[in-house]
Length: 108
Image 1: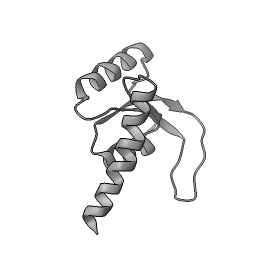
Image 2: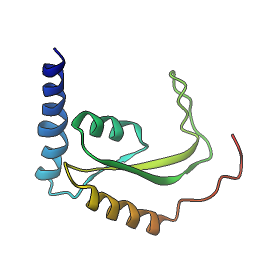
Image 3: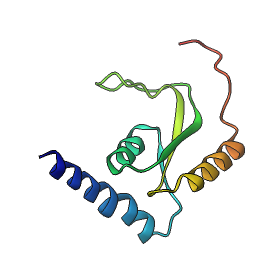
Image 4: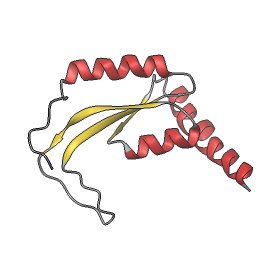
């Protein structure tokens, strides 16, 4: 049962997911706002992901699960197998260009 579940996760997240989209659209990586969906997808595939500061939301909403969209926001880069060097370059370039990283001023 575990082996079948793992096989299905890999098929959907790799073959029909990350690998397919990156190959079909000739991308270097996928970019997700926040860090939940991208991290979950890459974890299912066993692929690398990196999250960097993506800004700060002054206002936000609280979902039923208690997650808030107020505060620091991340940008998650997801790649295919063994794409860590590319992800590091992309994440670094984004951080340098955006300059969104800053020290917190309001301890929440």
